[in-house]
Image (cartoon, rainbow, N blue to C red; front, side, top):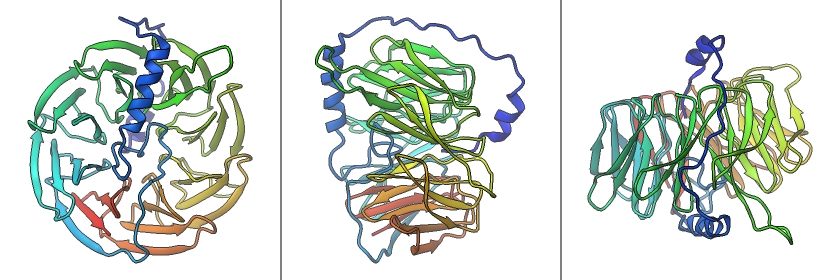
Length: 399
């Protein structure tokens, strides 16, 4: 994830885009799409980190474990800044950099395996599904790269920079663009299924929410989008129609974190919000009584808490149910890195270049490593190792 505030602020008074009701170019029955979605979720093999926040609900919770005493195993030098989060699948690490190169790196040795060159910077985190890497670039081109051939499978062009990372639902891939649209493409062919027009940039990664089944209705699958237009939107994956719209009161650069029927995110209005999807209402609001700064990072979820770092130089742990603070930690630097929970620890980076681990129960620091360069990327975890990139282009691996 990356900073967009300067561009967004300069555009705040522009003519807002008129929302259109996107129509599907073709449809798949909802029950069949539900089956495909379940297959998509189970595709994320235990221990792999296939996408920006680790799972379709964007919770930032790892299913892997880490040793108590982390040691630096290796570093890899990219050709420019790393602002995206690595994806790790079957022993290979995939990371993009501002030099426009997607790097595939051996997870054991840190040696480069292969590269894929684009024509623009890569700020979007790569996402992997069924042997294909999906990501967007600064020219607005969305790439699907076959891992076996190491070549382009297909490309799709938008009218704006792509910083949003991809998410998957069955045979569909979803992502946003700075042209103001959320896109849904066929994952195999790259053909447009539908696109939904918002009223601002789509910066964050869309979350996938499978609504609980009732006795009378089959489960329905939805995209949850928190955007720079200050709205949370719930969009039907089957046909691209909007079913809910919640005014968040300020624009959002973060991706939504979804737990059952609740969504959590921080805003540029200095708040952290808990939104109830069943009612379409904001269930609670949290604002620190003294240090009121924007939140850019996405939230990480434990069983009962929401953990998020802010530009107030603090990490906040809140009750998922009430939004009441559980603990705070002062990091001495702004935080744009989205936290990741691994067991009883939460990991994140700071713009001062310190990679830290906190105890999720009390917020006490239990480990840290000084990289010497600002960190805006987020961690990823796989097979007993944790990875983080820095603005001097170094990818670190600890284990």
